[in-house]
Amino acid sequence: MSAVADAPNRRSRDTYIIFVALCIFTFINLMPLIWAVLTSLKDPKDAFTIPPTIIFDPTLEYHRQVWFENDFFRYLKNSLIVSAGTVLISIPAGSLAAYALSRIPRRNAGPILSALFTIRMFPHMLLAIPFFVMGTFLNMIDTYALLILALVAINQPFTIWLMHGFFLEIPRDLDEAAAIDGCTSWQAFRIVILPLARPGMTVAALFSLLLSYNEFLFALVLTGTDTKTLPVAIASFGGEDISAWSLSAAGAIGIMLPIVIVMLVLQRHLVRGLTAGAVKG
Image 1 (tube, rainbow, N blue to C red):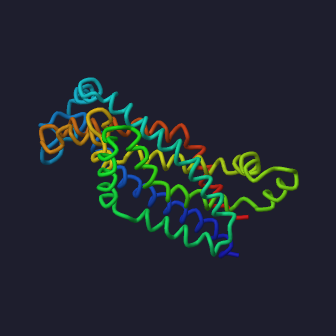
Image 2 (tube, rainbow, N blue to C red; image 1 turned 45 degrees about the horizontal axis):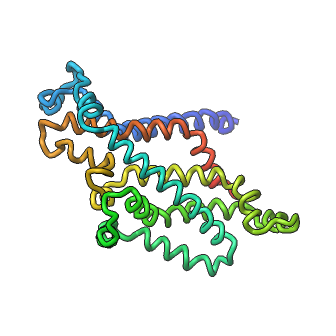
Image 3 (cartoon, rainbow, N blue to C red; image 1 turned 90 degrees about the vertical axis):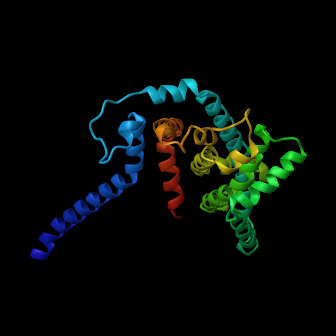
């Protein structure tokens, strides 16, 4: 009887330990962000004192410089155009490919998925040079189209892999039922399958958005003054100069805010999609 009575206490104690461990883990992961926020609010003389200054007079001067004196809105517009274009191309194309791979025999789909996974493992620098050469030949350097197509190419394997798992969870009986009702393969996919795969498409769209929004190397190589995106612009805000680190920290916070807002707005859909992908049967 005592063992049975102690079981709730042990469960409560284990839950408390797990909660404390998660809090510590979260705090450790948030430390760089907290440090960046504090640095962006300090003058450089306060940002690099040893030991670090905890009590200081905060200033928003560097945030004002980032947003209103460094063309931040133009770079933000470029990033949003590139990210939206990448999502609008990669999700429809990736959904079609993933659906087809989920409906063919596994022995035929396996090699294709393995090849896609191998492509995704290529170093970005290895792919950036051919894209630059092709962009130069086609006179497309410093255009949205070239960067969008490059990002679609490097992120598409991940999108297909992610969507493939969601489509596998949708029973094939639904395809057969739609065919019996007179639907073509395209109609069955569009009317029956896609609504069921919407949570997975939302997750894939969010990850595609994150990957394209944060891309630095391809944006550095393939863009110029007209289409420079936020990651490349922030890198030029004087991060190599210690006296400009407060400005760089303010830029890092500024580049993070739009994507944080998007994730907070769509958090419910993200959790729902990830949960749907984890449930079997």
